[in-house]
Image (cartoon, each protein chain N blue to C red):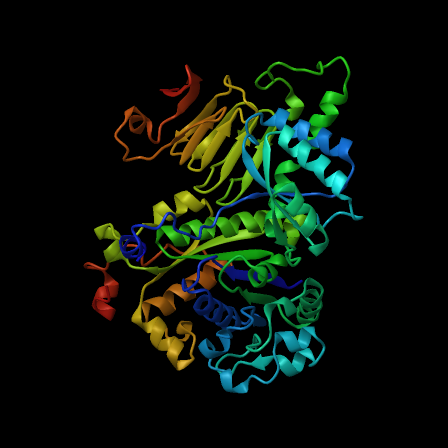
Length: 271
Length: 265
C-alpha cells in the first residue's frame, strides 16, 4: 500500500518545494519507488527544482482530465533511479483539481510506487486542500518565525478536520515537524524562534532541522535537489530527515551554532 | 491626501469616504414567518444582546419561491423585533422596488461560490441539536429559564482531546473542557465554564449566552482574549497590570461586579 505524504506549511516561501524534491529524492536513493507530485497548479515550480522543466509535456491536470495517460505525464528523474516527477500545469486553473480525479491518479500510482509525495501550494485554498486531502502523513514545513508557526498551526487544524482520514474517522494523519531555514546563530541572538519554542506551540514530533544555507538556493537554481550535495549541511540534514522518516534514530543536528564543533572544521562557518 | 482635500474645500458641508464594513447577512431559506420568528427567538435567547442594533443584509437568493412585498415587510418587521436593523436587501432585480419602498438599500445577488466559512459554522453549530433535544424533555426545564445553570447538564458538556489549532472554533452549549493546548488564533466558546488542561494561548469566551457565573480555568494562562458573559479583556504578557503576573501560571478567571478577576489556582 503506497503511503501518501503531503509537504505543506500554510505559508509560502518556507521551503516546501525544496523539501519535496530532496525528500522524494532521498527516499528513492534508499531504494523506495517514489513519485513526487506538484500540486501548485498555475505556479509550476517543482520541475525547476528537480531540473526537468524541459521535459514537461503533459501534467497532472491533463491526466485528471483524461487528456493524457499517466505514464505520458510522469517524468523519470535523470539523477536518481526509482524516482518520478508529476508536474503541475502552468496554464490551467486550480479548480481543475477534483477529488475524484486525484483519487483516480493516486490509485493508479499506488500500483507502481511506495511513496507518493505531494508538494502543496501555499495558502489554505483549494489547491492546498486537495494536496492534503488524501494524505496519510504530513510534513509540516516551518520556519523559525512567528507567522510561519501560526500558519503551520492552522494547517494542522485543517489536517485534523478536512483530510480524508478526518472525514472518514480513520487514524489521524501522522504529523511531522520539519524546521527549515534554521539559523542557530540568529536563534542565539534571539532573532529567531528556537526549536523548543516552535515545538511547544505546534506540539508535534520533530523530524529534522534543516539549517539556512546558501547551498539550497544554489542547488535550486541548478535544478539539482540539495540532498545530492552531501558535502553541505542542508544536504546532510535532508539525508537525516529521510533516514529518520524511515525509522532510524539519529540525534538532531544543526540546532546549535557551529562554534568549535567538528562541522565547523570541515565546512567552515556558514552562519 | 484627505487632509489636503479638506483644507482646500474647508467650506464643504460633507465629504464622501469609502469604507468596508463586515455585515451580518441573513440568508432566508424559507418564507414561512412562524419558523423565522421561532428561529430568531431561539437565537436571541442564546445570545440576548448579540443582535441589538446589528445591521443586517437580508439575502433572498436561496428562497424556494418568490415572495410578495407584503411578506417582505412582515419579515423586515420580525427582524426589527429581534433587535436587528435591516440595512439592505440582497436579491435579484425583482425585489429592487420593494427594497426602495421599504427604505433600505438594494444589493445585487452575489455569484455562488464555495464558502469555506460555512463549514466552520456548521461545525460549531453541531451541538445545537443536543440542546433542542434537551428542551424537548418536558419536566426538565420551563419555557422561561431565568438563567442557565453553569454546567447544568452533562450532555451539553463537550470534551476536546486534541489540540485546538489556530483558526479553529469550538463551541459547547454547556461546559467546554479541552485536554490539550489551545493555539493562538483559536477560539473557545461555551455557554458554561471553560476548562483548559494545557496552555491557553487563544481566545476563551465563557458564559456566551449571558451567564455571569461562568468561569475560565486553565493550566497555563497565555490567552489572547478572555471573556465572561460579554465582559472581555485583551491580555498579553508585557502588559503592565496585575494580570501579567499570572502569565504562564495556572489560573481561574471569574466575573465579579462587572469586572474580570484573575487568581492563581
